[in-house]
Amino acid sequence: MSERTAGLSIGKVSEATGMSVHALRFFEREGLFLREIPRSGGGQRIYAQADVDWLALCNRLRASGMPIATIREFAALVRSGPGNEPDRLALLREHERDVQARIAELQACLAVIHTKVVTYEEHLRDGTAAGLWSPMPADAPPGASRRD
Image (cartoon, rainbow, N blue to C red; front, side, top):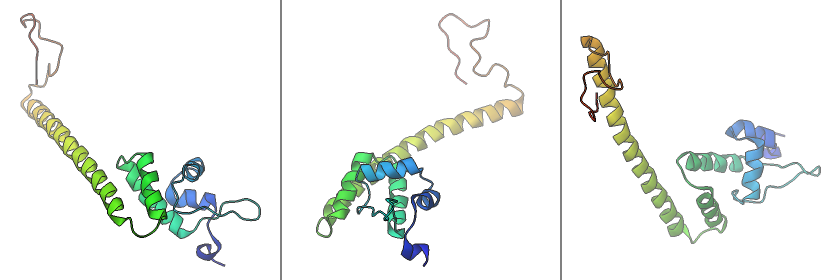
């Protein structure tokens, strides 16, 4: 019998997802799976490939900043079955907007950093890097600041 038909142990799911066993148990306690995770006669969890696929999505949602509470809400909507797709879409659209805003903020940060990289490259190339962002030259007037 293959793992696809026999089910996956918590250890195999941990390996497949990169999530710790503790995190998998947390997801189960918090109601983040789409189904109740069945147990073997010995009490061991038995996961399906669909659970692993769902966890892959959850990992991406978490990595992109979606709060656990929102993942829980999304999971509840999916679990409840057809008919709430507009609600799911609204939730995903809101998260998409949040991620786009964070990306825009990071792009602005990257532009500042890139400007500094170019400045330092120019100063190093021209031999004028000494004193970049030093506290202040000895001859600076009081209250002056240096911005390189």
